[in-house]
Length: 337
Image (tube, rainbow, N blue to C red):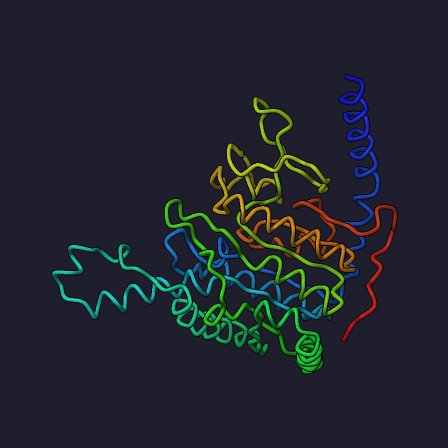
């Protein structure tokens, strides 16, 4: 009983400390100049795998505004396998007979994840290039694998490439090279259609290697949610704390109301598309970035049209991860570029 009381008291102390320093850290995000933005599959695509053009258009517009403010932006994207799967199924269906199409249906066609990624990469980059060009911005694709991240020489070349692209005013669009990856865990669970992994760990590596001030991880939740007991309602976690019981369902939130209370509209689903494994990787990515020297990370929704701007204005949105609990200003880690 004493142990439980002490643990509860320590958690209460943590929450009091977080409530005192978190506003200062959030205000310091206005000073971020090198930002890595990871846009997840639940943002890039709808549940059926089709590209969510409206969300991506809003994301591109916000990035254009950040560039006007002098920020350097590196975009880590997901969604190649999801979007590619839709195109691949359609192609396979067109190649099959009418009888087979009626019997099997599009969704029943087996999809090779590596091949789907090859389809999806082309689709995504064509879309990014078209949308960025509307704002007179150029983007460039950089594909990496797990082996690339582990190889020191390749990492150095990666840094040099990103540095040159940023100096040219170009927005690097980074994705895992899933067309050749040896990863066997599927992105989407075949039974539940939940997302098992979503390039969050890749984004943390990128943020660390480029010396980012801030990592923003966009998903379909406006923040992480926690539940103290099985009977309690989930509550938003403004500042991440180790050991928090992160939940995926039973959430009742209004993303527009959280960001802009006067609107109070736009209620989203009460369950994220991220599976348990994917949600763990999301948290792991944010923690790894902080451990690697990134000053702050924020997990929030990519469904809101002004999510990035709210974060960079220091508003209390999403779940904050920070490296220095008592620092009034954002301390940029020494650049590795």
